Length: 270
Image (cartoon, rainbow, N blue to C red; front, side):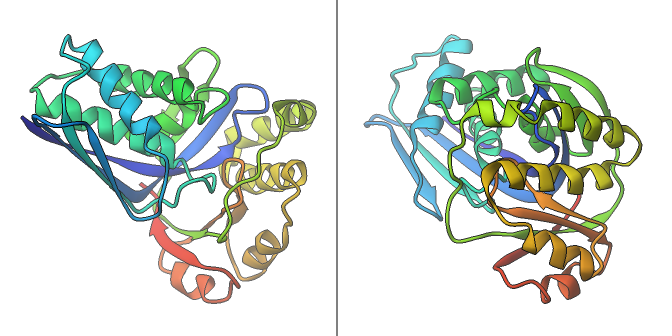
């Protein structure tokens, strides 16, 4: 039995780690997973940057348990993603969605998309790759658009289109630094003000959020400043960093990316 699954990426507008309320914008970076049951030991083949396969294995096991199949079955799982891991770019959420979809496809089982997303959140918690479960990220990767969520309740507060923009992802060569949750919670009052802004002007909120998170994590804001000076509509740390997401008018992404002193990926909103 074989199946395939896909998910996409998203970038932060509001970081949900501060007080559980998050907001994201979907982008077109793609994650693909292929699952095949076989008479052999489980093997996970991750194409691209080397990464721990624990999360993927948990996703397979919990999906098999959910649909009443043998969780100890042998399989080959191949994962290919355009999203660099451990940079704050929601790679874990995208992998969860894609792997779960591939397993469901292999056994011909249909599952409500929101239930699939929530299953992925539980897998991410078990793997300890997230503090809150990253419900906002999982929704953004699955559905696209602009999504506001309550991560503590796994509840979508609002969801709608964001419009067509180019998105530049600035990807440092190092992975994110772990910062205690308490340091994020210490800026809750400032984040509440940004959350109010996000309802009317999500792109401005993205920049404000990115600057606030940069302060908490100790990342500099030089890339944010340079992107804005080059004509970007918004720029900020995505997730807990260190990647910076830059939103531009459609057709200007490549030109602006060439002015930034970093490795870049140019994509678009989804």
